[in-house]
Length: 238
Image 1 (cartoon, one colour):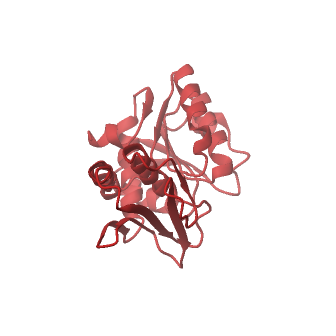
Image 2 (cartoon, rainbow, N blue to C red):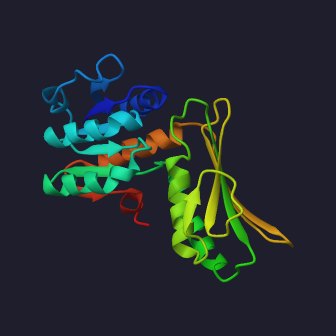
């Protein structure tokens, strides 16, 4: 399979290594040197594009893939306020979009655990839920896309919570997400339910980027030849 890598930072390089090890070819690499000059014709050489760039560039990169009739796997976060618009354009143009806030298999199992725990905890309002996410100092958005996905799951299940905020909050209707940027931490997410008598926490700790990169390549293999909007639940049959 021929792959275009849109975004060639640390994650892009990790994806490249895994893609090559699985027998794929990299036919286009987009980084700071050609981010505004790569062409639709160059994209058309690829069977699938994998997009891990920046929040500011993601939408344009996705639309370029649509125009090139190339399925795109997107891992960039920080642009989700326009996700519905992008999904609509994908459907209208009969293209293929695979989006996940996190491509790690472990994180997506963690999502299911988080959803189930929140459903259980809705019956016990004496527990207050909060979240913490820790990433490397180079991460451009806060809270992380994974933290937002976890928060939205909790809000959907807990009647008391109405929205998340990226700060400590004493408002019972707000779900507090504390974001920390420390050294080269790949990603740690913790959801905590605290009461006056005890505490329940679930945590996912990423040891490196390989899990994210492998998931993105597997998603690219899976989406080739498909049309529509997909995510990790489709890939993993969750």
